[in-house]
Image 1: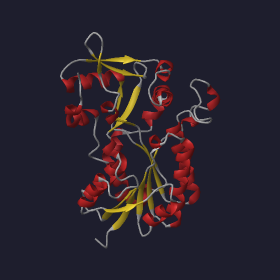
Image 2 (image 1 turned 60 degrees about the vertical axis):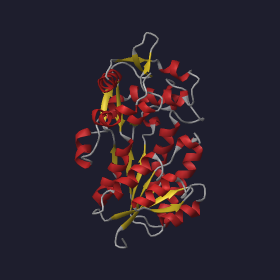
Image 3 (image 1 turned 180 degrees about the horizontal axis):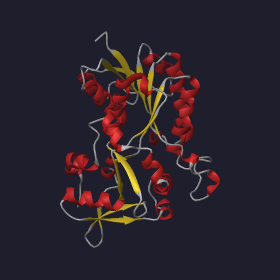
Length: 316
């Protein structure tokens, strides 16, 4: 174990970090070992990683010395921040600053930073087609991460920027088909007919990050856009129907209508889907599925993900 390169994995008990940790631990020949960062090393998820062979350490992004300590002696890191834990772009920015400072101070040689496009590059705030949120963002959880890329560059941290996208798991977490009043299963999304939505199995974020770390220096400084499939709402509905064994129709909800719904972060999610829709060609164009499968041969298409997860849908 001592001759293996240590990869510090942020958010190791979460979806992205957990996927990265498991991908590394599943390949004993990789030359890497995992140092799992978590705020609660005694949690069941943390203990599970320890049982798989990870070194579990406490690290809290609000307590920067703990992050420095967790990075010391590591070769590289998979880094991610969780906007949804607090829903504040300003707080997420402070977390990114702490990660970048710690990565520089401890001399990490390769960081894979899980990030997203800064939507303001294609959609200036003065455009007016969607409400400005938290004073200076279109989609705060995108824009704060995209803006954070520069913090790693300015600090001189050797970084690969991994642009993620909508998780297929979202269909299991409130966005899946619901039975309409007429009894027909309906996939209702704030996405215009014919527009593409790039989706990914969240586990593929970790698997792809692991492939980038194995690939080494050739990926430093590069931005890699990740997705497992590019499908329209109607195509998602058709595939869901095939997997669930009954027809699913797609119903598009206007962005403004969705933003007005009394659900958590409706404006944020509505803006996100509008960005996906208004810039679907640019967004999917930055995600080359064939090249991604060369990098990560295990990359799940939506069909492959459904084959593994259809049984988890609770359709009444």
